[in-house]
Amino acid sequence: MADTQNATDEGLIRAIGPWAMGANVINMVIAAGIFVLPGIVAAQLGPAAILAYVICAVIVGLVFLCFAEAGSRVTRSGGSYAYIEEAFGPFAGFVASTVYWLGFGVVSGAALTVAMTDVIALALPVLNEPLVRNTFLVGFYLLLATVNILGVEAGVKVMVVSTLSKLLPLVLLASVGVLFIQPGFLVISEWPDFTSLGAATLILFFAFGGAEAALNTGGEVINPRRTVPQGLLIGLSGIFITYVALQVVAQGTLGPELANNQEAPLAASARVVFGAWGALLLSVGMVISIFGCLLGDLLNSPRIIFASARDGLLPAVLAKVHPRFRTPHMAIGFYALIGCLFALTGTFKHLAVVASGASLAIYLGVSLAVIQLRRKYGKPAEGQFCIPGGPLVPILSSLFVIWLLLQMTAREAAGFGALLVFAVVLYLARLLYFRKRRGQSKGTE
Image (cartoon, rainbow, N blue to C red; front, top):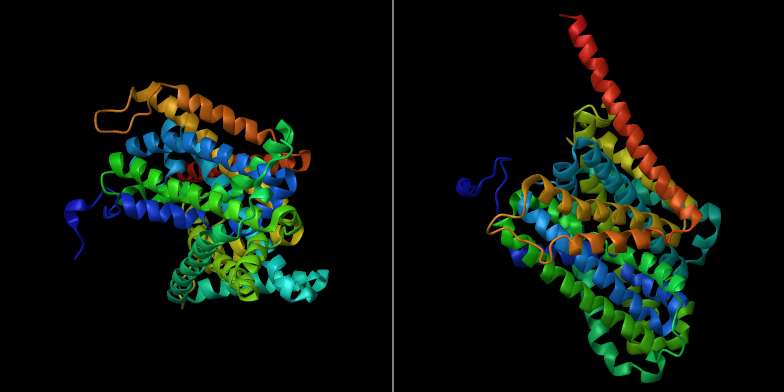
């Protein structure tokens, strides 16, 4: 029986505590980027790559202090979207929502699909042929869409398996790999310049994205004023420790060769530590992890499109429900189609940067929202989490995020700019739609 005493105005039950939220943060963030990024970052910074992790950790820490305060004040479901809308109104909230599901959801999914295909191509070189690769990508998205249209039970089971498959090999590599580190490989012989450090930090930020998704369940959190900051601290601490350990082990076991393993660097490190079976374990774990992650994405994200279409924000056809399977099949198909197109036309690095840009835009919005919420409602009330130092943290967070956004190349900035323009156009189309509906309703009176 549902606990009606803990029910919210949204009809949801508050059942998520700090440790559950911390685990959710870890699960949402540690996806597949960490399987690939150590080699990419090492190619830019060498042994100094650890500096990029530290910078990311500082920025993420500042940003999520802002999330903690906003989340303790705005306790309804929606996470970053709800915080930004509460602070700046429906236009900013709508743009933030669109940037999130399209820029982070679709584009990051496409980036992970590209990474997965690159790993499989190591065993099946035929996937390097353009026609075969494109056919595989189309078939893969068809499979994801079909599974989710047919139902959710199988998808949930696969997601549970994928969570275990991605964490166990990583923990095993990090804990045993320290015994195989060659200290000389960790010596920083040349310190990177500011530009290289910024570019590497931007691409690495992709692996830190996703923690905010755990806050979308704000309406189901027990005592959000305490649970949100505690859960974020638990989750982000675990993520940083895991990431740093893996980068150190990869650098310490592969040395300069790490920069030459940009498709599956952790698998190459596992080969040194465990032999051929270790590399196979990491590679299989990565493929299963990405598959489960994408399957879950195709399960959850299309529901945003479905709800928007049902509310009249998107074409009504996207709100259709399959008569037999009772799933939003048109929204699922639409989401899969966009993801497939991105995967066909981009590389992992460029897609990851655009996805990072989308998440950074959301982080900037939340950082500014903290300042605006204080202007509108004053300081947090007693019992709510309050960032010490007044506006210092949200200002520093905003400046760091802007600095990272400025690290984009012209091509990447153009892609991110197009995303923002699309969100604004979609909002204007929404206004015109409702204005037309109001005009028609008045005409029939």
